[in-house]
Length: 102
Image (cartoon, helix red, strand yellow):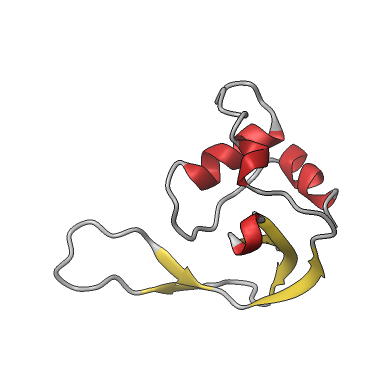
């Protein structure tokens, strides 16, 4: 499984390309007494490459027409509607777009 590490270090969004070290990541048990909880999991990753050029939030802000089918719009939609750490699925086209940064 290929992963991309996203962060806000120095205004960059894409930081590194990674691979998952586990075939089946382990889910984290829900806490008792809390009605609504986002499913969580613990993964171990290995960095495969650092980004060669920046790709940050400002590169995504203009891409907010959620139905235009563009890779930048897909990333903007998945990462900036809610600023939390997350693992998301992306389209093959968006994966190809991200590969261009490594």
